[in-house]
Length: 249
Image (cartoon, rainbow, N blue to C red):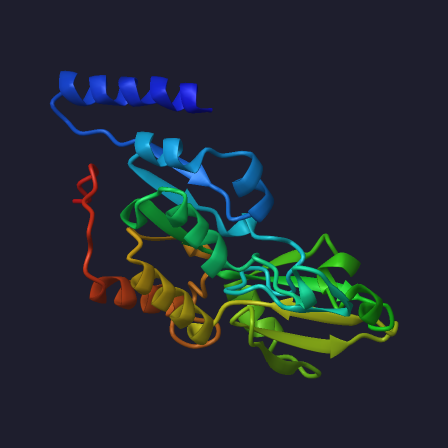
């Protein structure tokens, strides 16, 4: 990978000089702990590229919230040396983004991806306690629900609203006729506020939305583009440490 990025860096630099116009080299990075440990030499990657986009869809799939701020502690039921009785997984965005920084990536090169969608999972509540209440283990293939459809869906009767204190995201649940339960984690203004607080505190270069058309673009549940508008307002209040080669006119 490093050799490929070195070749691309040379090509980008040459193009910038020959045409008297700056070019940038971007890299799409993962937020999955295993990939960070095994797939990347983060220091070399960040030395060679201009920006790294951190893909929210690559988060650890064992968390109940699909874009968690922190990992959910697990009661182990026994004492394990060097761990204790509770395991604190390093799966949340706060930890995985910090790993990029700790291993040599300048915060201003990092762009956090934010997905404006929810994930629906149907599972058997009787089995959940046997798997540490990890819904994703019972229903690994969740269904994506875009915000513009999700906001109408969860207004139907039968939903119970709750908040994942570790994931920093809302979720809803309702019982189905077959005895199973449907659970949907999603983004709202409160969860986005926590993510933008992290972006500001860590001094990231910025964010990108994955995908903007997933927002309530028609105003079906109120004002159109509610989540996008909030993200725009927050970005404008954060002093920027970077500039882009692209001039958006």
